[in-house]
Length: 133
Image (tube, rainbow, N blue to C red; front, side, top):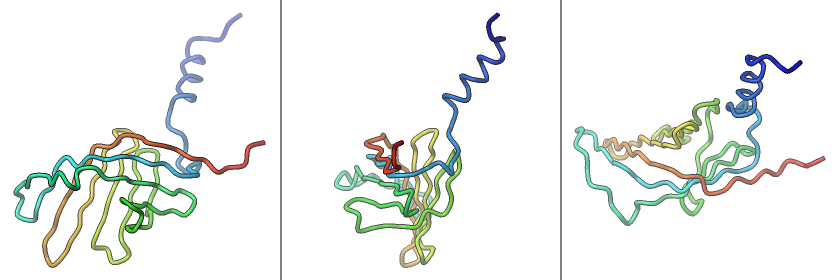
């Protein structure tokens, strides 16, 4: 006698569903293309093509997110099955990454001006440093 259909569906959902956030380990890298930038007054500014692509690396073991060449790094504040958030030590920059849609966004404040940036990302690599049995 075979498994009931509901048990097959439950097993399949467990296999392809999101993994628990606590299981995050290693590093994940994404190449992100800036989709829009908005300034404080609400006007959308054209994207500077010189900065159109950015690399984001999430180091889950050290709980840090790195930008570009690694000179910018921010503490990861929260990891859930849907989103990863980070914030600079001063609070001037806050960011998020959607694990479901691979979209990212940042809001920053500099000299009284607020800037919001949105990114469309694609997976580049994932490294796991966990010991294998």
